[in-house]
Image (cartoon, rainbow, N blue to C red; front, top):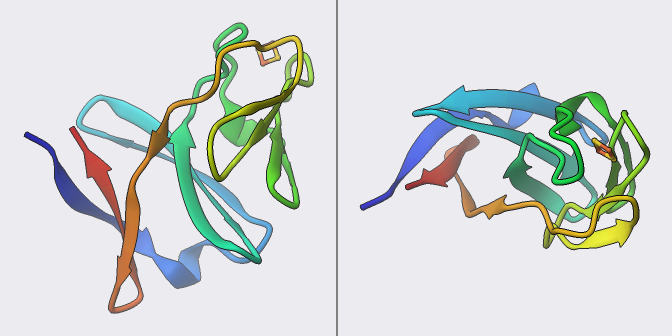
Length: 103
Ligand code: FES
């Protein structure tokens, strides 16, 4: 049974920012853009690179190793060489704090 866990404050990740976290054996990244905050697995599905060291371009995060692109809202692959989507995490904001749902 999962639960929402407080991860960080909204002020800790500016728009355009990417930040990596590890909680309860989950490594994930929170991205912030004009559409809000999004949490994804911090491991590229192509060859396990930490996606948190990539760059954010609007709604797309680009893997630093071979350039696969993923939609941060859905995890969907937008460019190869990855073919498997990134896992996404549910996220909510309360009192300026970011909570992520961890199983
Ligand atoms: S490890 Fe991410 S594209 Fe290859």
